[in-house]
Length: 230
Image (cartoon, rainbow, N blue to C red; front, side, top):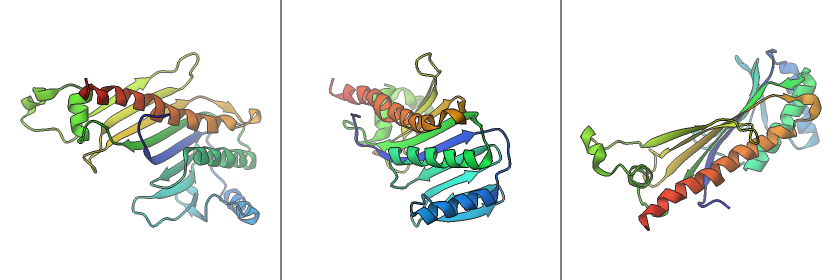
């Protein structure tokens, strides 16, 4: 159980494969097949200068729900929507497996997953003060700049380990659009997969990226949030 209620604002997944121009006809036939079955994850199909795109048009400013089929990757993006991590992972798995079968793609060369979420510190009413005093302990040391920074942030990069073969790049900073809110982002990078072995791992990797962000990272955030009590 994570330490804070989260508001996840973006799920992004890129699946890299050997360069191969995507077939618009094949993607359109897949879209039609989903519609005929009554369970299409996207409502619209289009051909763009960069490649075929499946989308769910939205009315919320900044919202995005799409998968773009580029020459060397499939790029899934869900931003400012209502999709859960589990549903996003399932969608990536399903579409990737179908597209690989249609396009004769026999390997995923790599996978990168980026998840962004917002949380509010519990003991600090201002997230910049949490970063400055709770996490960094800067206090008045920033006075040397003769101006208060608008954004305090940090980045940590975790290399792959033998029992955790993913690299994680974590960002934590106060959120410019809301003074009470922290912005957290985890970008995880994974290695190759053989399509013949099944693509269930692409879904598991999405879950691993999310767990690193909302479990491990928020436990880290909480440790400095509680400094105020001490």
